[in-house]
Image (cartoon, rainbow, N blue to C red; front, side, top):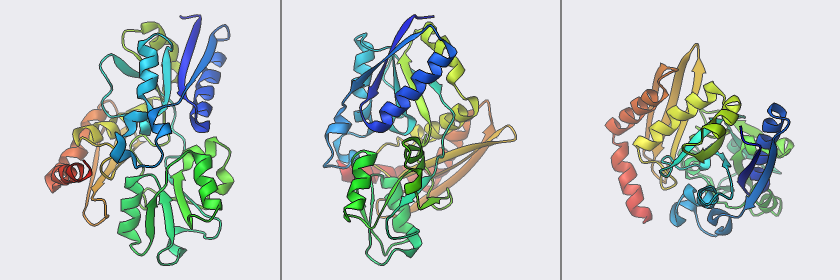
Length: 310
């Protein structure tokens, strides 16, 4: 076992909370271990005036952390799984996925109790094309607009009156102590979560059995299986930030149940799929859901959207 490890992390409040959480878990299991954090600002944190789909996608949040590991400045990186690209660069792997927090989307507003009571043309902010498409499909009278920035920035813009309401991941609000700001949570039937939403992942360089052994006790098998199924579905569809895509799996009675969707940017064309399978074959479940979506034409829709956003 290593005597000292360095954790690479983004410097946002939520990312630091997650890195500190992993550090505390490791120290509780290994009292003699030295753990340090290496805070970094990524391209995704720096470019806040454009949607992620237009500036390179979620990989912008992890690239600098991977470079730090390649150069030996860090041993591992802690990520929100929903920010991790579906295909990791050669030489990297996800060594552990922690137990999932609340995976749902949260409705936050100073004036209104839910999306359904918002008046026509009320401005709703979210950074997610997935959320935007689902709201437009269900409540087309609302004005859904892009909202970037960290959690504090988004809450400030809401409080300044720039938006009637905003949507955020419930997990992030709870982790940062903002649970009281949540006016309502959206059931997966109303807003299907993003792939990996609510889960924390730990990335390492491949070929580090010492780190893999150190991190193994942090892995939550059911969460890991669900995330693997969700990511396999998205990967087969070449999912990223360019298209609205959602995927959420649960474990019941030793089996994985996965729901997924792909939609156009306007929330008009929707393709939905479900799949289930053995807990020990999560990727097969994800591929089955992707195949069902492809049979409906989701691959052609994805290609159209990607072409439009180039």
